[in-house]
Length: 244
Image 1: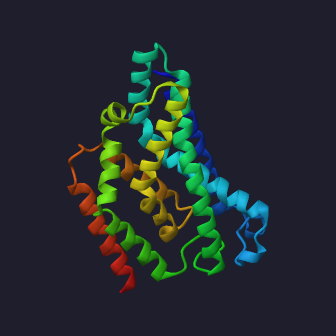
Image 2 (image 1 turned 60 degrees about the vertical axis):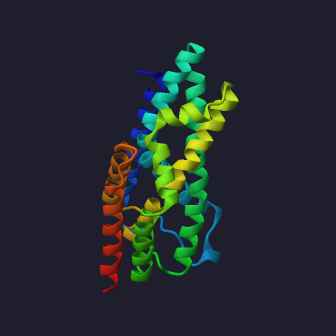
C-alpha cells in the first residue's frame, strides 16, 4: 500500500474519532460545562471562530478525503511510472486538495456565524428555521440537475481522464493539480455540505450518510446520471414536505 494512502487513512480515522468524541461531549456534558456559539454576531470572540472553523475543517477532512482516494491512488501510480517514486508528489497533491476544503471551511464558518446571529441555528447548532432547512434541501436537490454539478461529477468519476488531460510535471505541478481537483470537488459537493445546516451541524448520522452518498455518487460510471437525479428529486420533496 502506498505511504500516502496510509497517511490518508490515519488522518481520516483521526478526524472521525474527533467528530464522534465531540458528538459524545455534546450529548453527555452538562450545559454549564459545554461550549456553545454566541447568538449575537457581536459577541463572537476569536476563540469562537477558531472552534467553529476547526470543527468544519475536521468535518471536511473526515467526509471528503475518502472520496479523494481513487484520484490520489491514480495520481500516485502515475508518479511511480514517471518519476520512480510518488511520496513527495502525492503528499503535495493531497495537501493541495485538502487546502481547498480548508478554505471552503472559512466560508462555512462565516455562514454559521451569521445564522446564529439570525437565530436560525440554536446554541446546540441545530436548525431552528423551517424555511432555512427547506430552502437548503430544495437548493441542493435542484443543483443535482445542473450542468455544473454534472461536469464536476464527471471529473471526479474519471481520475485517469483528469490525469491524462491536466497533467503538470514536478512538485509545483502536483500541487497545482491538487488545487484543480479540490476546486472541482467543491463544485461537485458544496451543496451537500450545506445540508448540515438543515439537519444539525453536529448530526453525526447525517455526516455518515452524506459521506456514503458522496462515495457512492463518485463511484458510479461516468455516464450514470439516474442516481444523482433521483437524489435531487428526493431532496426537493423532502424540502417541500418541511414547508407543509
